[in-house]
Image (cartoon, rainbow over the protein chains, first blue to last red):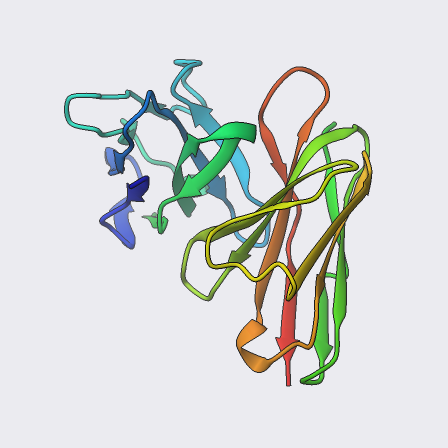
Length: 109
Length: 116
């Protein structure tokens, strides 16, 4: 079965601390993984995707096929990073997305 | 660019009535549009995928006669919740992929449906 698991509902850190938002997936094929972010009162937007191997707003994520993980990391959290983060897996035709439950990141001053 | 709008942003309807939600791509042509449902404090659940001019493909467990999807043009898809019941109250979100060669999904702001 195709599934995305984000074990933490809430991650609370202080400004400047490292952040790691966990994501594990279950998929029999070759996965395409994404991180989406939703800031307060804004729509969902793409943060990064594993195939681009980019760093966006200081965030990076590496696909680990052995551990079936795609954790999102940032070395020094900023207050403006506070948002809801969703890990997603693209499966099937037409790029259908399967979302994890989401993790709320709260960065305190 | 790549903006998706939804109308209305909020709607309240009475049990038994039908309500239509529109999803528009404002500055691009959408090859594919998706409809999601989000319950409070839960994730997005894909309901259906639609392509212009063809019937929508519904996910398992989603009643196609209850949630009617029409993708009449490359910039507009509509979701009609028929004979709405209180349990249909939810946040409905659409997304669209562009005809510009990238498969990124662009999301609308969502529509809050409350059925009384």
